[in-house]
Image (cartoon, rainbow, N blue to C red; front, side, top):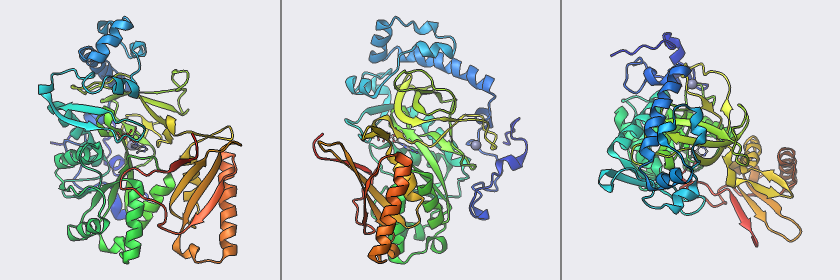
Length: 466
Ligand code: ADP
Ligand code: ZN
């Protein structure tokens, strides 16, 4: 069945060029005929999208009212779910926070009996006790469809071999993509992270074309390739990577793309509202489309809780529209981003958000200045002498906090004389100061000497008394 769309009549619009090699256009030649290219949903006019959202919001609120947490919250705040009639009414609903999820742990957000729940996942626990999430069979289906939609959008097809290098188990990155890729009909290699030599063996042996991987781990894989004398561009058939689960700069993406000769797409999601598949880059890679038929998106000032003007950064707040077992209303993700203005040349109408700059709780205050680790990463990754890993240490001292940045340099750079290295160190201090307005201490360290994890990278360490 060929679906047509009012916006995407011109096939060229879909054949978005990627900025790398021509054969990496990300769009396969099998036209648009797929249940996972969904112009019916992906190119809705704003008006239709909003009326769909209202319909789904009403249902969601009525459903949420069955959950112990919302039952009590609605009662306390005298909210009548019946009176939610417009998108503006959404603002009368209370926010839901990570602390609420923790306090009402484990079943306080369930709207169905446990008999109907088929799966549990949990957050990684990056910022404290992990929260748990439950899925009905329909939730799993809807989630897999969203992930399949994301993958299809970047050009993945059933002919692809998909090596899923994200953690399986409670973390949503593994199974979330696994189900999406199976739906799409890919051959899925559910290897999970780690054991890098085996990863490389599988890539070569089974001609993997698509991987899903944490960006810091992708850079580590690149280093192992170098050490083993493997040239991925000649020895592998890789063409696409999905990178997400942790903040990363454009510089990190560029390094991954250049080394492997692939297109890397930013993938955003969080377990509380499914997992991956919430927002995703299209072939134009100008921000991530956030699926507004599945989520209502707000961006608020985390202090005033008021919406920020378009284009200004704030905290992302999500209301689920299709989740059955555990709907969430106005969930404060703590992730910082902004809406990108204008429409996307790909023709999809769902708004785009900018790459996540970090979480509200990632902010460091050093000498009275607010700093996000990603600002430092942006500077480091723009310098060709700098290697693929770094660590920010905040040393707590009576006289005020000190910032020490440990920076791995490239092997060939590390072999240069002391004078050269001292010049580079000073250059890094200067460039970082320009960006964050605080003078850091910088230590250059050997390649591969800083600690690495298979999961989300630990970029910041607090040293000394808190
Ligand atoms: P935890 O919050 O414990 O890390 P999750 O495993 O559910 O739990 O991870 C979701 C979080 O990971 C998001 O809230 C966000 O902070 C981060 N994240 C996920 N994808 C991205 C991405 N593409 N860019 C930046 N951060 C991301
Ligand atoms: Zn687009």
